[in-house]
Length: 233
Image (cartoon, rainbow, N blue to C red):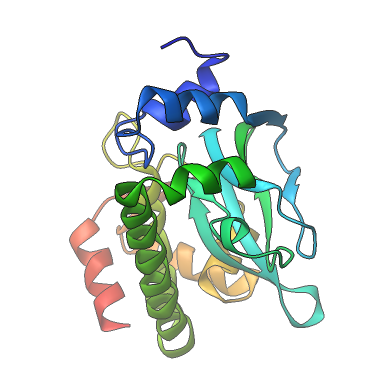
């Protein structure tokens, strides 16, 4: 199949894509009813309160999804990996975005038109089931995170955040450095703590030899120990 650009091909043909099993005709419909955008680091994909335009696929790059809290303090809800999707709500609701998303590095996104995707969804039960499974998994993740962020101690929350980053983005070639660069503030917002507490807890974990820190890069040295801290809460 001829693709208009490599970005749409990544979103449709990547091995874990929900679109992988679609017919050529339906894939062509997706191709002809999408747009793409190049977004620089620290720029918004969208802001809370804006109207969704469709389903967003992160063709390349990494994104943080967050919600503004009391006093403008942000809470990162999730991190999105390359070929990840944002905006299932846009397919079923006319409500505005209830959160915001920012690129944490230069990214490219593809946006699938809501109406066109809806037509494909109606005639593809397998695609509908895949979509339902993803939504259910995300709901389960959100529930689990709510409990963790409200009941775990600071050390347990930060350990969980580092493991989430590891599981989302994987390791670099050395097999221990998490393949993402985040500010201390972002790590704090992911862990529901102040930046000063995040810095202090990271330093403690590093002094214990559980992790290593090099600027914004974090390496997990003792993964079993970090997982144990996470389990203890």
